Amino acid sequence: MIGLRRGLVKGARIAALGVYVPERVLTNDELSRTLDTSDEWIASRTGIRERRIARADQASSDLAVEAARRALAAGGLAAHDIDLVIVATITPDMFFPATASIVADKIGATRAGAFDLEAGCTGFIYGLAAATAFVSAGIYHNILVIGAEVLSRSLDWEDRRTCVLFGDGAGAVVVTASDNGGIFSFDLGNDGSGAEHLSLPAGGSRLPATHETVDRHEHFMHMLGSEVYKFATRVIVESCEKVLADAEVTVADVDLFVPHQANIRIIEAAAKRLGFKSDQVFHNLDHYGNTSCASIPLCLAEAVAGGRLKKGDTLLMAGFGAGLTWGSCLTEWDL
Image (cartoon, rainbow, N blue to C red; front, side, top):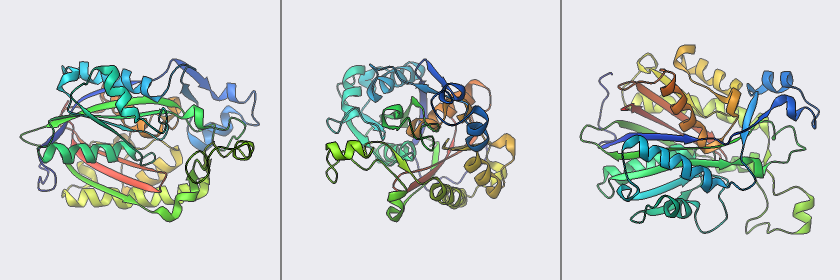
């Protein structure tokens, strides 16, 4: 633990963590049976070797419910202790009602408000920022922030540029009030001029579902990978440098850096530019792929289980995604 300057965010900490991934594992070798690709091609370009795929009867709310229940159990909390449920997702069960409303009902959080947050793959960081603001202002005491995705339903499984990258999963944390604080600084950003580089074009009010939009595969994810790579490697560095400077912390003071799990080349390039050593950086996309809003909490759970993240450690998290959005958060791990 180091002496962080506590003038930016006061009175909030992460008090519990729970995750859930579907049982079905889809390997690169399996994908190579139907696509012009191979395990070597995918792994060398992305760092991904396998990903989890939800059952046909599982939607994002089902994964979120399991992660939420595990977080509550880990924190010794009951559902009625939760004041607000925030679900960060780009694959909601439906346009409305909010997936968060469904989750709150299923876990029995009858006292809680609920809303969805859509900020691309940066959604979990945005959700943490929103929860921290509510708690620090004294409006709520315990908030569930959940990142949950069933991305396998939004992929064109004939397009190897996208379908090899993504997987399904969910992670939840409880953000609660704290006398000493634990979350120290945030940086959130957006550049809408790059919206076309990563999108799911049809199904909304601009392009409602028609035979034509279905025939053009516009209800699947579209991504211009080269532009996303250039954007991500730039904004991760700038955003992390800002939160570190705001808290008067150096890279050497950070015990663990957990970036969004999109591509190993992006992670390595950003870590190198920031000056992190390899043992300061955590990634698990080799066995989960890109799970969008779930990727950071899945990393946190695995880092804790493996002894890479311990109580008192200084943790830096960073995300980027559709929007184009970005965000980072610096915290002292308190579990």
